[in-house]
Length: 582
Image (cartoon, helix red, strand yellow):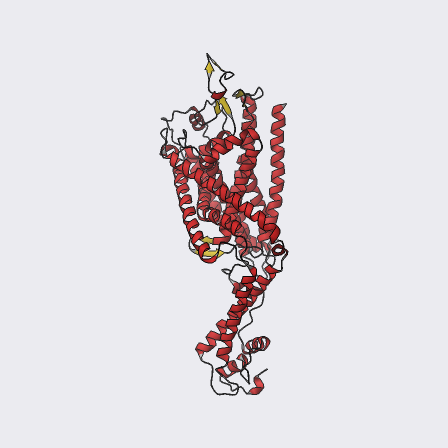
């Protein structure tokens, strides 16, 4: 009965969490998508993909919870209900959910997301749904070929025997390598690609997020004053050019002045748009509630700083400790079997394990924090392919292609996060949860009644008949032991992640010292001119358009100066008299 209650409670919590993550994915998609350019098919794929990937990662704490209930922490032995058959049935359920989830993730990465991306790219006038779908399928076929190659490679790849491995548990995993190794290989490739996303996006985002939370929003009145000053300076420069040419005169505007005036007028529209944006932020309800929000930002900033320090310290400790691995080392993908250096997060989880559900809440917080950091990195860096900038990712202004590309990056990063949590952040806790076993034998029976100090946490070298590893850790070990090259690549990618984090941290600190650590009310790095053109605010630089803008701004020369429209007409070879002025 106890086993049924805790298993039912775990899956009930998982269902509730999945529902909450679905609501979060809907909000996330609507928050970042451009309301003027929403493609229903792309939005549905984005919502489903994010929900699927977040739910798969959320299964990890449930997996830990289930194995943690197997052992009685008071005796260091299994509960009466925890027979081999009951444990196998419980873990088979989790394993089936994992296989289905990773299969669906692969289908989204290699089929649904590319299909919806190219389906939107083929959007043209007078083009039917069938022709768009057929054109999108032709491009998507390339991704299907890649998935097929990975599956075939995984099926025919023969894993190493590792005959020198002296741990029963690792040998058991090697013995269980079967046809599912093909899916494990595909999942390993996706996770390795996700580690690349962690390096280039999560690392910088992890360094920037606490700084922005602590810095808050930069001064909006100062930003308004700065924008108005830039706008006034721009108009003075335009007026200076216009004053060189009097109406009715025969002097034509030089090509240099005409080009400079065009650029200044474009810059003026950008500054006007920016001024409206700043004033909109100033008058928004969010800015008016800053006195309420600001204390929470500081609290989250301090918590984020603490969590970032713990994460980086844990990864550094585990990565260094893996270099001392003596059991298998590089041939086993640097699996850490006997830790020598204390891992701060691993110790924290083990200390919190008696106070359930605090340890599980902390694990969920770490997962969501890493997702937040990745999103922050995508917003700051933009969506790029190598050095080529593709899309910007920002609130209410992300095109469907950018939303799909960001979803792909987030899915891959969460796949890589599974490896990082299991192998680097909290290895022992991720493998065995809060299980403890009795390390004292009286004749043939284990008994720690008189020796409670010998009830110790489970680790990778513990007896396999007592300590049960999580399905997540077994799946990752199957990937690493089946293809050690992936494990070695995983290991060195962790070093790249640490180096990228350090570089980004130094860069952000230097930039913060120069420009302040807060968040700009508006992002001036955005392509303001494209925004203006989309909104129809950038008129053609014709004579009539220039004259109307000059009249509207009052940029007529005192004492009978010429407007830009009259001068443009002169530049075309026609003499413009006073009647051409407004």
